[in-house]
Image 1: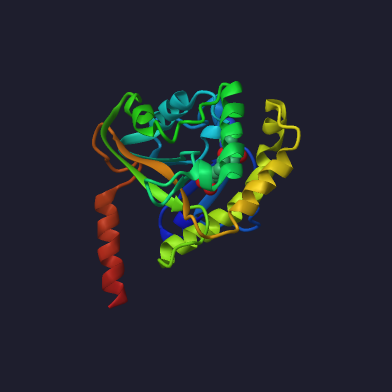
Image 2: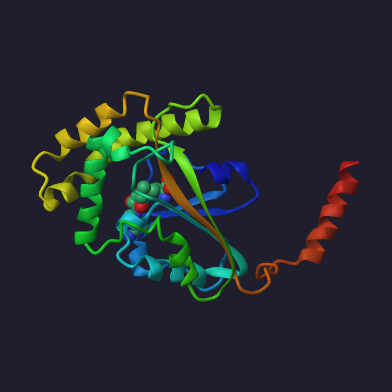
Length: 245
Ligand SMILES: C[S@@+](CC[C@H](N)C(=O)[O-])C[C@H]1O[C@@H](n2cnc3c(N)ncnc32)[C@H](O)[C@@H]1O
């Protein structure tokens, strides 16, 4: 949605299992409900950019999902991927998050175990570089890792904002984990999760977690899309400019 607003001349297609809680989309945004574990419902080489963000907790075959993303990319197109590492840490690399925030660390460890039991890899974010590196047909790849505060402990405006947003997201995350945690053997997942949230209300200790990010390119040159006549369009643009003067 933010991208649709930031790039009004670009057509964006969003895909998820469920409809986002947004009544009106921008004109250049089209949304489709689709289970991407069944492959992408698109022809080969139709998108200039494919962006995958934080979906590994629902992907039994993450590599296969990425292969499908590359199939629908045009040659020279960009694959952008971001996934969370589920491990709480402290901003001080020497600090011990398990000691400082035992409840949130324990419940997230339990969640990672629950994912594992369902043959879902909880460590996609940690291993993102190798996941994307194993996708055939990519010619360039840049991996980076960035820190996100779990609470608004920082004076830096951007870190403060991301910490605030993460804290809000953490408040509802427990509900989405409940069934998996119960299947894993947690008798009181809500209570255990709430204990973790309580810990995070104390802003000292500076908890963070990391996200892995990859920007990769599909081999080949990004040509004009089919049916696109760049010469005509340039001429039309010049004519428009003349008429405007
Ligand atoms: C953490 S949310 C991230 C949402 C969005 N990608 C973002 O970054 O804001 C994970 C999303 O993955 C979606 N998801 C999980 N499994 C999926 C599947 N098999 N096909 C499509 N979407 C799926 C969920 O419905 C959920 O909205």
